[in-house]
Image 1 (cartoon, rainbow, N blue to C red):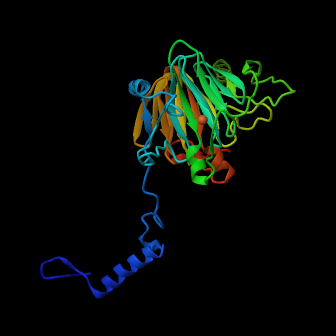
Image 2 (cartoon, rainbow, N blue to C red; image 1 turned 60 degrees about the horizontal axis):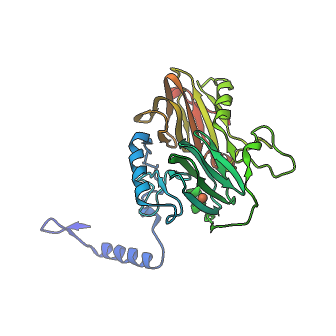
Image 3 (cartoon, helix red, strand yellow; image 1 turned 45 degrees about the horizontal axis):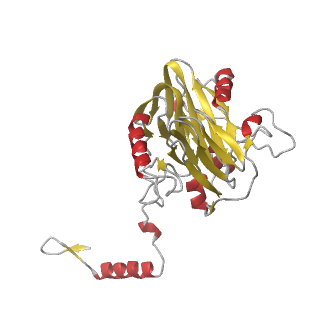
Length: 350
Ligand SMILES: [Fe+2]
């Protein structure tokens, strides 16, 4: 490029050739790698911690109640959207996982369907609903975790007295990226009279049935968490597992909960997985990169990949539900986790 007398840029013959080549490459479905904004460059985006306070999102949920019904939308869900990953009609919470708030009013139901996407439900407020999973009724009480693994038929029915709100967690973005997201509307097969899943316990299950476990009651979680020993990193963790073999409750999702003792703080932790955190109880703060987020019960926050995160609990201690895509990285041999203090981070044991 040269400069003409008026100070503007004048096209040289080489510029014209290059511009023509760009146009012809594009028409041929080719792109010059040297013009790529991402190739051969360190990823510049340091993702920020994203957070949604319950008190801020609750009015938006109430608005959704007034405006739409599960009769005319498949599910009444407000997704948590990362603006850097979302576009109109394609909201996304993180690279591989989505989370949102679903609400049902007393007497409402959300029809049966199934999909290859795995989903979990964590009850945040209200009670008296059930999620029917492959013909088994799973009660939904505050803090309960209900699984609807990929391929399982599921519907939601609410016979309680107050609205019920739960967190939906799904690995939809991963399935869409892989081209494996299939959906099938109900009603699905006749499973007979709904069975009461209460007979299936996290430790004892009937031998003569498939006995898959779809419900993890909150009181069992609290008992397990309170009995779990503190790690050197300053917290106790329990994982939601399939009691039949100890594998992850959902194969490609990492579901766990941590307990931070009163006034305690965890060591800084960094991973290339992304974690969606839901405060089950207690108050505290998470320091993550440049941002500090003060949280309380029912708040949701996403600790991004490759940024040090540290959780601190106030005087009452805290319990936090965590859902992450860690298992996908682990299976691919790509997981990198570090814990420790500041510059002295060491690789975390697998
Ligand atoms: Fe679903």
